[in-house]
Amino acid sequence: MSELTVYLKPLILTIIFEGIGAYILGLRTRKELLFTVLVNIITNPPLVCFSLFLMYHLGIEKGTIITYAVLEPLVVYVEYLLYKNYLSVKNSFALSLTLNIISVIGGLLCQKIF
Image (cartoon, rainbow, N blue to C red):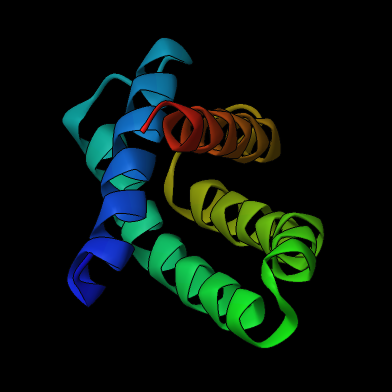
Protein backbone atom coordinates (compact mmCIF):
# COMPACT_ATOMS: atom_id res chain seq x y z
CA MET A 1 0.00 0.00 0.00
CA SER A 2 1.52 3.31 -1.03
CA GLU A 3 2.02 6.12 1.46
CA LEU A 4 -0.51 8.28 -0.34
CA THR A 5 -3.16 5.56 -0.06
CA VAL A 6 -2.55 5.32 3.69
CA TYR A 7 -3.64 8.97 4.00
CA LEU A 8 -6.19 9.26 1.20
CA LYS A 9 -8.27 6.19 2.03
CA PRO A 10 -9.30 7.37 5.52
CA LEU A 11 -9.88 10.91 4.24
CA ILE A 12 -12.11 9.77 1.38
CA LEU A 13 -14.06 7.40 3.62
CA THR A 14 -14.49 10.14 6.23
CA ILE A 15 -15.73 12.60 3.60
CA ILE A 16 -18.22 10.03 2.30
CA PHE A 17 -19.53 8.97 5.73
CA GLU A 18 -19.69 12.47 7.19
CA GLY A 19 -21.11 13.90 3.96
CA ILE A 20 -23.96 11.41 4.01
CA GLY A 21 -24.45 12.00 7.72
CA ALA A 22 -24.47 15.77 7.26
CA TYR A 23 -27.07 15.47 4.51
CA ILE A 24 -29.26 13.22 6.66
CA LEU A 25 -28.92 15.67 9.56
CA GLY A 26 -30.18 18.53 7.40
CA LEU A 27 -27.11 20.15 5.87
CA ARG A 28 -28.33 20.39 2.31
CA THR A 29 -26.86 23.47 0.71
CA ARG A 30 -23.74 23.29 -1.43
CA LYS A 31 -21.99 25.64 1.02
CA GLU A 32 -22.80 23.43 4.01
CA LEU A 33 -21.75 20.20 2.31
CA LEU A 34 -18.56 21.69 0.89
CA PHE A 35 -17.74 23.11 4.30
CA THR A 36 -18.13 19.63 5.77
CA VAL A 37 -15.61 18.38 3.21
CA LEU A 38 -13.23 21.24 4.03
CA VAL A 39 -13.49 20.57 7.77
CA ASN A 40 -12.51 16.95 7.17
CA ILE A 41 -9.63 17.93 4.90
CA ILE A 42 -8.37 20.07 7.80
CA THR A 43 -8.83 17.55 10.62
CA ASN A 44 -8.48 14.07 9.13
CA PRO A 45 -4.86 14.10 7.85
CA PRO A 46 -3.37 15.28 11.17
CA LEU A 47 -5.49 12.69 13.01
CA VAL A 48 -4.27 9.91 10.73
CA CYS A 49 -0.64 11.10 11.00
CA PHE A 50 -0.67 11.27 14.79
CA SER A 51 -2.53 7.98 15.02
CA LEU A 52 0.01 6.19 12.82
CA PHE A 53 2.85 7.82 14.76
CA LEU A 54 1.40 6.60 18.06
CA MET A 55 0.79 3.10 16.73
CA TYR A 56 4.33 2.90 15.37
CA HIS A 57 5.96 4.08 18.59
CA LEU A 58 3.59 2.65 21.22
CA GLY A 59 2.16 -0.36 19.42
CA ILE A 60 -1.16 -0.76 17.68
CA GLU A 61 -3.21 -1.37 20.82
CA LYS A 62 -1.92 1.58 22.87
CA GLY A 63 -1.86 3.87 19.83
CA THR A 64 -5.47 2.99 19.02
CA ILE A 65 -6.59 3.61 22.60
CA ILE A 66 -4.92 7.03 22.67
CA THR A 67 -6.37 7.86 19.25
CA TYR A 68 -9.93 7.14 20.37
CA ALA A 69 -9.54 8.52 23.91
CA VAL A 70 -7.60 11.70 23.16
CA LEU A 71 -7.30 12.51 19.47
CA GLU A 72 -10.88 11.84 18.38
CA PRO A 73 -12.35 14.06 21.14
CA LEU A 74 -9.89 16.77 20.08
CA VAL A 75 -11.11 16.44 16.48
CA VAL A 76 -14.73 16.66 17.67
CA TYR A 77 -13.89 19.87 19.53
CA VAL A 78 -12.00 21.46 16.62
CA GLU A 79 -14.77 20.57 14.19
CA TYR A 80 -17.37 21.90 16.64
CA LEU A 81 -15.53 25.26 16.70
CA LEU A 82 -15.37 25.36 12.92
CA TYR A 83 -19.06 24.52 12.51
CA LYS A 84 -20.02 26.98 15.24
CA ASN A 85 -18.08 29.85 13.69
CA TYR A 86 -18.81 29.27 10.01
CA LEU A 87 -22.18 27.56 9.71
CA SER A 88 -25.59 28.48 11.05
CA VAL A 89 -26.61 25.23 12.71
CA LYS A 90 -28.59 24.87 15.92
CA ASN A 91 -26.21 22.61 17.83
CA SER A 92 -22.71 22.56 16.37
CA PHE A 93 -21.34 20.28 19.07
CA ALA A 94 -24.04 17.63 18.51
CA LEU A 95 -23.39 17.88 14.76
CA SER A 96 -19.65 17.41 15.19
CA LEU A 97 -20.04 14.56 17.66
CA THR A 98 -22.64 12.74 15.55
CA LEU A 99 -20.68 13.07 12.31
CA ASN A 100 -17.53 11.78 13.98
CA ILE A 101 -19.35 8.84 15.53
CA ILE A 102 -20.71 7.98 12.08
CA SER A 103 -17.22 8.26 10.63
CA VAL A 104 -15.56 6.11 13.30
CA ILE A 105 -18.21 3.40 13.06
CA GLY A 106 -18.07 3.48 9.27
CA GLY A 107 -14.27 3.23 9.34
CA LEU A 108 -14.35 0.31 11.75
CA LEU A 109 -16.90 -1.49 9.58
CA CYS A 110 -14.76 -0.93 6.50
CA GLN A 111 -11.72 -2.37 8.31
CA LYS A 112 -13.72 -5.49 9.17
CA ILE A 113 -15.13 -5.89 5.66
CA PHE A 114 -12.02 -5.06 3.62
